[in-house]
Amino acid sequence: MVNQKDPRVLRTRQLIREAFRDLLRNKGFDAITIKDIAQRATINRATLYAHYEDKYALLEEITEQAFHEMIPEQVLNAREFTGEICRQLILLTHHYIVKFYQICRLDSQSTAVDEKVKKMLQQIIESIFLKGDSLHIADRHHTKIISAMTGSAIYGAAHYWLIVGEKDRTDLLVDIVRPYVMNGLGLYRNCDEYLNDSPTAPLG
Image (cartoon, one colour):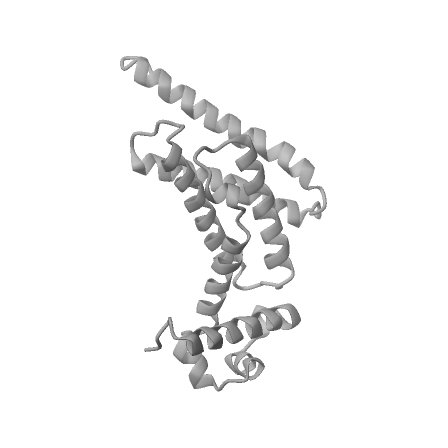
């Protein structure tokens, strides 16, 4: 097993990731082979397999790395899910999709990438909710549900925006999505406060 902290290992993994990114741009994921990656990285296939099980594991790693590198500091340090944080997450997700989904020409693995990004988005939102607890969610499971729904709404809208060819109208995307997300969270907060204040209030 390779030592992940060894500078030589880090350098080799960097070469592999760079080679894979270049191939994604030129060939698309489906056409890439392990031999292609090894040749582009100037290593042998055995060395590549010592670092990555297959090209799918490599795709998963660079998907996660690229997304985290794009997260603004303001979002990482946020303690409340404000309208501005929502705007930044919408733009981040849209930019990521345009850059990674379109430029890298993903086909058969597009669903896997979609799910990976939605999961990371959910984790960011959940972390913000937990730090500030602005929604006063008592149950951690409920926090995960709200975070998943919020992340899915943002990702779904950004993905649709790419499909319909509106990738240059990010201002309009934000104008549509942000009120939907923030109003939804506001309704949840108001409903939760109502139920907490009125334990016998009817649910229907």
